[in-house]
Length: 123
Image (cartoon, rainbow, N blue to C red):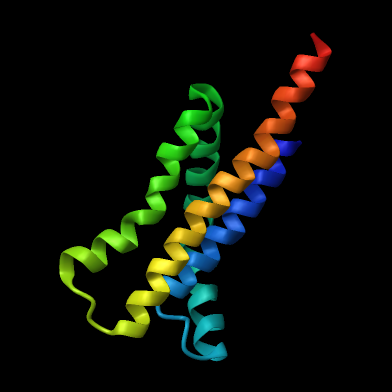
């Protein structure tokens, strides 16, 4: 059950990150439109990807969570590789990418730590 809640939280965080990085950071109507497109076209693949990453982390251990969290550094790498362009957009995508990484690590610590404690107490 904890896996379901973690996947649900990370899908919401990922959808918000994709919405902001997709250009929905200027006005509310743009945010809602881009968010609708993200949910319509990327909803199921996003659920599948987050679920796959969650179970890979559970299988490989805690260190895999930190490796998976580096996915959030992709926007920073894009800004470094291609130049800043629009400075407001560059700042926003870097912050949302780092926010995604932080959310992955925090949900890992919250949800997976409880699972390991419960398994240890049951043994």
